[in-house]
Length: 158
Image (cartoon, rainbow, N blue to C red; front, side, top):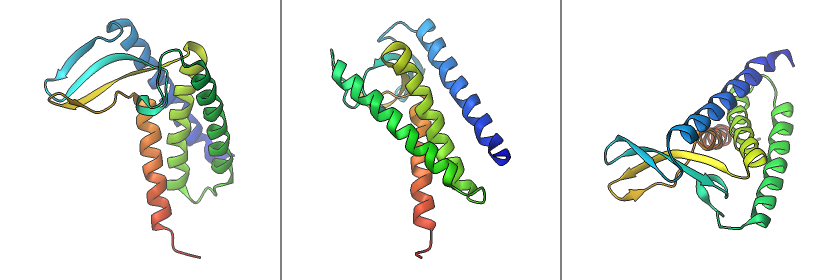
C-alpha cells in the first residue's frame, strides 16, 4: 500500500485541479458563453453536460439517463479500483493509466452527484467544425484509456 502513495496523491491533486477549473469557468463565463483563446481553434466555454463523456446521451429532462450514468459511473469506478489494487506495483505504466481513469471518473462523479451535471469547458474546433466540449476529467479518462490500450498491445501473449 505504501507504494501507492504517489498514485493517491496524483488522484487528489488532479481531482482538485479539475474541480477548481470547473469552478472558475462557472464563475467567469456565463452558461453557454465562450471566450476565444486561439481564434479559429480553441475557446473556453461554459456548458452543462447532463450526459456522458463528450456529451453523449445528453438530453433535456433525462432523469433516468442521469440515474443510469451515475450508477454506471459507480460500477466503472469500482472495477477500476479493483484492477488498480490487483495490479502489481511493478506494472507502473498500467497503474498510472488506471490512476488517470480514477482521477477523471472521480472528478466527473463529484459534479454529477453534487450538481446533476458536469461542467465542460474545453472547445477545440477548426473553423465552424467543433469537437464535442469536454473538461480535464474527460481528458484524464481518455488518456488513461489510451495508455491501457498501449499496455495491452505491448504485452506478450502468454
